[in-house]
Length: 221
Image (cartoon, rainbow, N blue to C red; front, side, top):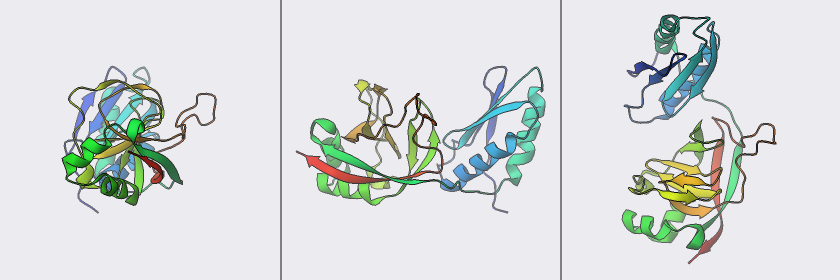
């Protein structure tokens, strides 16, 4: 059995427990363990949801049906036994208009990385990204697989408005805005793909385990 990373548990309100291994460097292996643990915890009496984040898991339970200590005991028992179990998912090509008004941070990010704009786009489109988690806002995808040379901390001063469809980088993750909202991520381009529609079933376009490949639709100066 593969060695298990350490973690911490904390209450998140009266009816939820958070298992967090985010202090560790993000890895696909840890994320696969989190997904496996989520599936296992859904079989515990009183547990209604198990929501994976980036190397963490929020377990929601009914405190009238089960005591927090029993849920905690289940997490402590199951986590060491979980082996990585990658989720199967769809692979989707996402067309991107890079640069210009659609990608206001592209040139700055290229300068910061010591690359040309063309090289940044080449590296951004060369990777196959995996949806590690969905959250923060409806349909938002946290994508692992970003070229480490493109990683950059989020903006010190977030934008008050980032449009739906913005293709972005934040720290070591890539992402796509599903709705117009504030964000401190760096915008490389735009896509017309709609990530969330409450009238659609399912409402979110992507689920954990899905894979995304960015393809160049156009490049604007």
